[in-house]
Amino acid sequence: MEMSKKFEITFSSKNNQKIKELNQILDKISVQKEITSRELNFLDNFEIINDDELKDYNFLSLQDLFYLMCRIKKTIICDIKDKNGRINEEILSIDYNHDECKILLGLKHSKFTLTDNFLYKLIYEFKHDNYSLDTQDEYYEKIEIEK
Image 1: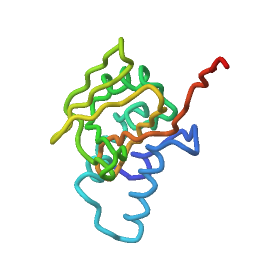
Image 2: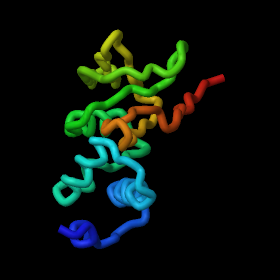
Image 3: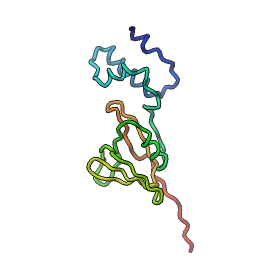
Image 4: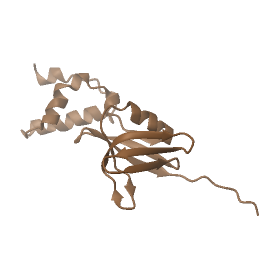
């Protein structure tokens, strides 16, 4: 099958991650660089990969993050910074405590708590075929003090 026929695409968005990855792989092929087995697998399965599977998610509340992490079928790496630097561990379990508005992440070597005063992001990493969890922004609620 001709490569051009295999990759007939309707370009719906400049920011489509699937298209960006395809273009990077095709650029490698055009300069005769060897492609990795992951890239070959991506090309072989291009037609059956849904755009939803490769989507970046930004400005997620704690509750949105929990429901999204439960739906994602790929590995999620916790890349949040703590007092010791970037955690960089695979998330093995997720427990949402509705009463305290906290998520307890079970990591490979430890546990980590996510709180409600942050917005989070999940970014798909093509090179590793996983998602990266990080904080997007922190916010504070004003508390009125009576004088």
